[in-house]
Image (cartoon, rainbow, N blue to C red; front, side, top):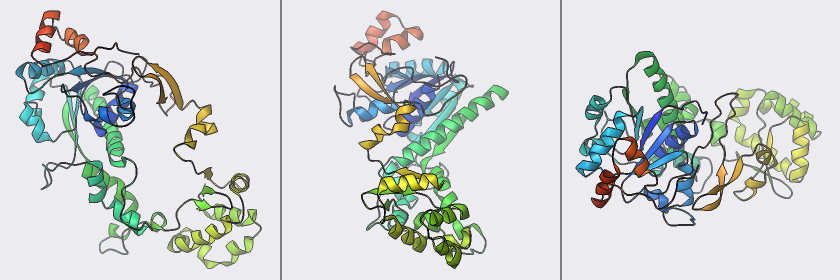
Length: 405
């Protein structure tokens, strides 16, 4: 593997989505990611369609590029093994509450003594200095706590709704990766590890309010919070004569080009609501409603062709079924078919970035439960007899399948 993080060892003590997604990205970049699971396994193994038990579709898509190790950390022998592993690691990534890590005997005060160069990175619900510190958190809960469902209703939904994507888990996972890579650079300069807390609530407040803080920016406030363009009920795909089209008509040039393309330049030139971006933003819902009526006059393909010629940003409206037939995604090989050693032919989403050197790429398939337990324990100095004892004690287990590259 030639990724930029080759030589970095990450102990991935995360489960479900947020942490596993972050760890997978690190693995795609070449890190040796060791996924540590209890004998019952990560619960997300059981989600979604699957070919075989414990290998659900969602699990496969957030756990590639990892090796799998099973340890029962509630047993002394399991705790001893994880401490040996941490002594060899560069990063510990976890997503339980810090109180739970302390109860396991793996609080930062303990782990820092084992390996002072270790980056101890936690992704969990809330910052530890506030009254929510010990509360559990899930994607839906944080969406609600930052007001996202309320914004969706304000923008025209009949009731508050969650975004139909694990947007919090994905966003915070990405934030964890950027923070962790920066911390690795800091360690290269100083030689020192450190503890990094990445709370979901605070991270998403920062993410959301950079759009919507609005007039609350100032003291005293000079207007309400909320970005009108994003909250406009007419901000949606435009219905055409035979379907829908996505278009963004935003700048002075784009609005002028739009009305010129349809032969109605006088609307842009004479309607004071089109004067400039500030004025248009104040009237954005009415202007998008006006455009929506115009879009009904032509077919989707006619609009796509016309808007491309007018240099107005446009895209087709895909569904989860049609996205796989998108010609651009086909050309860039965004979807790859691979042979998984146990699951057969599997579609994999490619790494989206392109590097001139050290190109990230998936290095392994998502591991079966305990697939690499024996391999990793041997690296830590355990003999075959030692491993057999750990298996007999229920501290670890080994998979019946072989690792797939």
